[in-house]
Image (cartoon, rainbow, N blue to C red; front, side, top):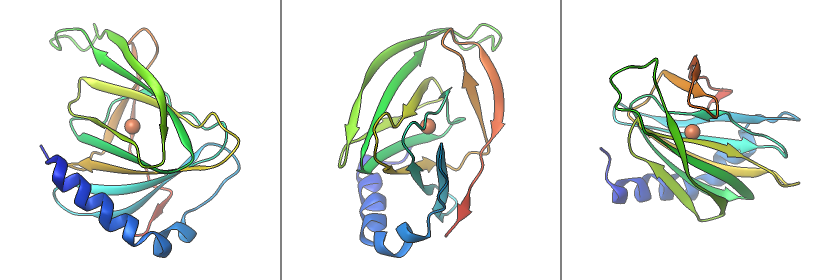
Length: 162
Ligand SMILES: [Fe+2]
């Protein structure tokens, strides 16, 4: 697993370059866009631009570690834990373990495939966040509130900036 101090360094590097990539982020009127800023064998860094009302479903990040950092605006983040023993993928159970607002400078980390979250921008302003995934993941699970995995989806980029 990637060390916390390493995450801080990776995030600080992208914040220092923010004027170079922020204006290149794709925009749309609803939802959110995912733009890759950096990718290497060990991890990738994405910038997510959240428009008012944007919301993800409950999802995992494959087997990857996920660290997030809000740069602007405010995100509403709900965290879930899998409570099943992991032996039977048809019997997944999840439990809400926390929910709260994250503002600029705040962040979160999901350390294993048993940790999930949903993220939304409930405000009237755009929000911007950085996401470090270590290692990169190609598919992720989407869940309903009862823990049923309703889809396995491919990880996609709206822009590849690095
Ligand atoms: Fe996520």
